[in-house]
Length: 466
Ligand code: NBP
Figure 1 (cartoon, helix red, strand yellow):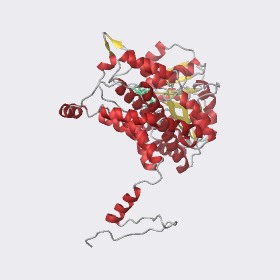
Figure 2 (tube, protein in one colour):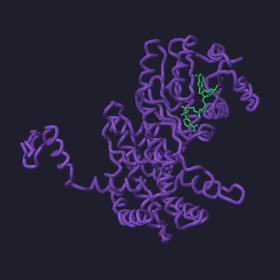
Figure 3 (cartoon, helix red, strand yellow):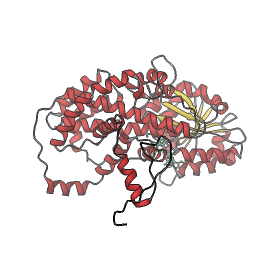
Figure 4 (tube, helix red, strand yellow):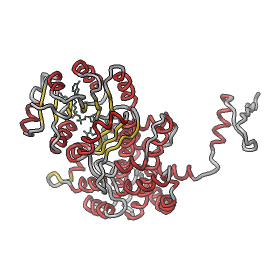
């Protein structure tokens, strides 16, 4: 057999699709999956279902590694966490200097930094690559965010560019984001933005469902999707609303307890660590955690019995509020990446990042296409004159929607978080002076004064009782 150009370890949902994508481009590939007591036939079944002259399958790592041309290029598509370390340790004995391991899973960026350093000592190259787009993206063209060195990335760039999604100008949606863990970091923030985008749509659905039927809501979202609000998530939400099982809508039968694999929490943790007010990601993560408290919500709702009135609501006001909140969500996500880029000296090109997120990923949207230009012209989304104009325009709609939602007892944490952020960021005199006084009162932490331009810290003996 000829040697394969690239290998994939892990024939799960993503590995299978990516392997088919690679072979479909006429690139020879070797695939490996472990055999366990319960799963003996994963590789054989894959080869049977996908006969191709470009695919070779293996159940032994040594044979798999021997089947690859050197320097080997191996994509790990296994669950994030200890499985990645486990696979690296298992495969290492069969690698040689300058071989390239690429972690294509959703690994934590600090794990990627650690693995990269460890493998460097053994002369094995390592790339951390965020892959977005889910199963369909992996199959037809994902958006790929690579972290690592340019010299190493150059060796796989040709293959990655062939398998990646293409943007409107036919450029591949893959880029070298920056060094070490930067690729996995931006993938984590991508997922954080995704969490908030999904939550915003869930809030719109909750709001509209107090007055409109599923068919009517789907029709409203379909109209929105034809405007500048168009996005992949809006498109699938509209389809979900119409899906029936028997006589009823499937959505009505799905338990309202949201799962999470952890990347949203990681994005939230990073925002907190870096001091970035990514309030919408935090709200979206909290909303999922609240959804998990099903029993308490059930019990307490019976005690509270909120009165939901069937007030007429204006979908166009909601559309404007949704548009406003999405701008803030994207602004906060890109601010988080910019801050990380400065803190870790990654030099991330935000406009290029927006470009590779215009196709092949879950948060692709018309807004993302607009952000490519906006982030090329301004460092911060909200600083752009066109965005500030749109932002201001949405304010009245926010007033109406927030008032109505609260009077209907509908929780809209992400939409309200966007408005709180807007008000806070456009308020010159904030009440943080009181926080400083309280800190000084109980902890003698000191405060700076408005009548002193320098950074001198003052402290007061506050306790009136002495
Ligand atoms: P799956 O759960 O479908 O597949 C996981 C793969 O990892 C399987 O092939 C499994 O082998 C293998 N594996 C595990 Br688990 N432990 C292993 C070990 N110790 N040694 C060798 N192989 C091991 O996950 P997936 O959805 O394909 O996701 C893979 C990665 O891509 C994850 O990091 C995920 O977060 C990320 N991701 C997923 C999506 C998505 O939409 N699903 C999107 C973007 C990124 P087995 O078959 O023997 O159990």
